[in-house]
Each structure stands twice: as structure tokens, then as C-alpha cells.
Image (cartoon, rainbow, N blue to C red):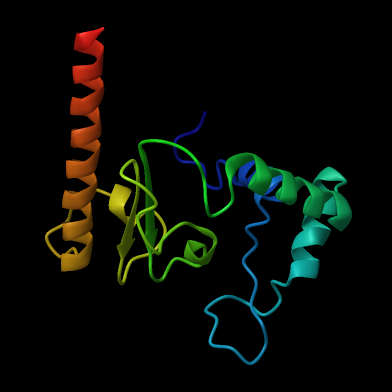
Length: 154
């Protein structure tokens, strides 16, 4: 694998979008969307058809299956941390409004986008990002401590 190459993973992401998620970046005309208005639902479905031979009906069925299987925006899991940023175009598709339970927690970071919390800390990080990283670290640490305790009891 060439570490200098670009676009690594885009075909896999497109496949997953076409077969499971439907996370298409689109822009409606007349909005302040930062992306091209040429990116429409139809153009994204065309990409799925051209690249993989998948048309809109199977896409909708597969997305429905994924949402049913994983619980959509009301999953039923444990030790899940849902992290979203306010300027991430996909945050609307995530779980971000409130903690679902003691083991399903949300962290909403004002002023950040996709995966900002996973980047290395920088001196000029916004305060909301710094606080979110601290919250995430504390929550993961607590869950790891619980798991270690459970393991030692066994």
C-alpha cells in the first residue's frame, strides 16, 4: 500500500453508503449548503448504479434493514458513545440529542465537524472540543474500569 496515495477507502465508503447507510451529501438549491448543488440524491444513486449496479429500490430496502437491525436513532446497546459535531453534515443522522441510558451516552461538540475529537490535540482547539475529549476520556475510562472489575469478579 502506498502511504502517499489519496482517496484510500472511498470505494469502500461508497459501497457501504450504497448498501447500508444512504449517507449522501446533497445540497438543495437556494440553501446555504457548503457543497455543490450538483450533488443530488439522483446523482448519488447514479453513482451506486454505475459503480456497483445497485438501483434506488434496493438501496432503500437495504437502508431500512440497517436501521431496523441496529435500531436507527434508538439503538439498544451498551457502552456506546455517540459523538457528533454541530457542523458535521452527518450529525443529523446520528444520535446526538440526549443520553439514552447509563451505558449509551451522547457528546455533541459545538463548532466541530466529522471526527474532530479523534484528531490529535492542538493548542488552538476550541474549548468545546477540549471539553468533549475530556468527557469522552472519562466515560471510556469508567467503562474500562467497570469491565476490569467485572472480569476480576469472574
